[in-house]
Length: 402
Ligand code: ACO
Image (cartoon, rainbow, N blue to C red; front, side, top):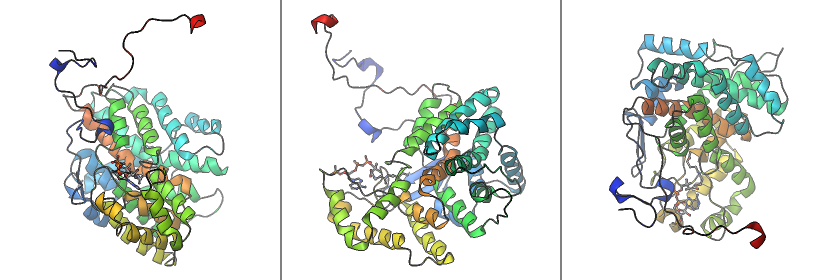
């Protein structure tokens, strides 16, 4: 029953599915995407409702535990998160090993992976308490890790967490405060980040989450597994698109150039793609993009930036693309990354920190999926097969005869 490609048909039917467009790798209770109708739910709650009424930390609790917390549960969860925000002093020294112009995502990958060297005492994957400590630790430390990466890149001393602040205020302070100077967190900026984080918190089996699951399926240290997710997120086809969108808008420059770039995106001989457009699952508007686009108006108005050129350009690009047959036929709509950078920029967050912002927000999704997989008795090592297209058996030829 073994065919020419070495696939044993007695093991079941093999599907050939590059890019896993039609492969379900697991079952999951966490997040539901209805791509045809542009709907997204975490544990049954619509993401629009959560963005409007909830907070990022509450959403973290929901994703990890399956239910919204009551007040006591929320207080205990917040306490646990604030308990874990510090970085070990030895870990802080690791930053000095990175060149000053290293991309913060490179630093994040390295620092997060090295957490595995510090926390091997609580990584019994069969113990629910260990899994919980891991998730809380990761959620708590990511803002500290990312803010320190930013401080390293601009040559400023790192600022430690202040645990009386809420999650995103703490992050903003660690990024923008300077020692011996007063720093007042802007509540509008903290709220805007909180909403963006809710919208980025999970998205079922996307490339980075699948990577975390795959690494985790071997029984690998979970902190190391998270580091693989950060690496996968960095690519411009995934979380790196938020940075790529801003660079693209800057390159387009103004509305008169829009049709030229739309033509470039349609040209199959040109590698250029409209960044922040298209999605593997959404064949309709990405609901997150809708929330962010409307929130853009609010944030820009607050900062007196109503005439923000990049936002106007993004709106124009969307308008032209959505009237173009190429984009209509392929159901290519703006995704979560198309407008998020406009808000990040209005908050003064530098472009190379956009993807780290996504990584902070998505950490809970990675941790929730890792934990769900570990608790699943059906878990097996993730090990896809291939269709071998290489040589058949050949004779070895000595080097002097080649
Ligand atoms: N610009 C121009 N054409 C596009 C774009 C785009 N942004 N996206 C897809 N297409 C075209 C493809 O060329 C293809 O055309 P064809 O049928 O003539 O060959 C068709 O639309 C289908 O696209 P695929 O590449 O097959 O779709 P896939 O599901 O593999 O890729 C992806 C999805 C990676 C998101 C893609 O749309 C893309 O590269 N977008 C730009 C990058 C981006 O915004 N990424 C962020 C995604 S959201 C996130 O991860 C947070």
